[in-house]
Length: 186
Image 1 (cartoon, one colour):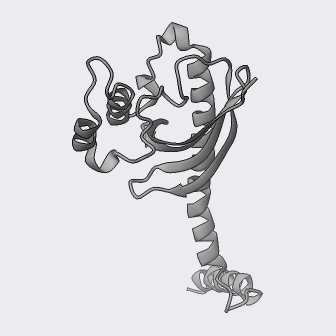
Image 2 (cartoon, rainbow, N blue to C red):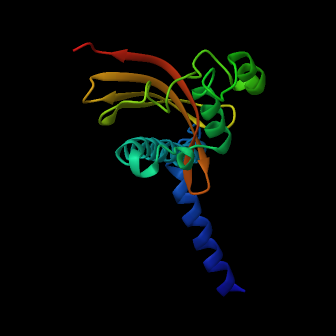
């Protein structure tokens, strides 16, 4: 019995010593747990940002090869929405009223009606992302980024708020609020 008591005493003393220097009012355990929970979220925010910048720049660098097909970097619903928005009041496209009726909640003044994907117009040069700042997490679990795309050849800027959704091991663009187009006259 004596052999069993000594290890038990040693274990009790060891645990007592580790807690002796701890401030009983501190929330170290709680704050470390919260920090551990935040870290993966901040990592995902940074990964989504890197993915977004790379995907936009890669799309425009390979625009001809891709034939302008942005559907691989967008959710299916957003790709369909943007296709409809681009073609409003064009040959074969729907009216703006029909577009509003079809898309209801998704429709807004920033839908980019009759504009191309991410940039206004069909002619563009080299597109670079010059700003991409995380703003907040959306109700649906996406990440909203305030973004500025710059056409370095045509000296134009396109201010966009872009929602990126997690998708498997990657991300997809789920919405683009086309805030402002700034064209510099040469």
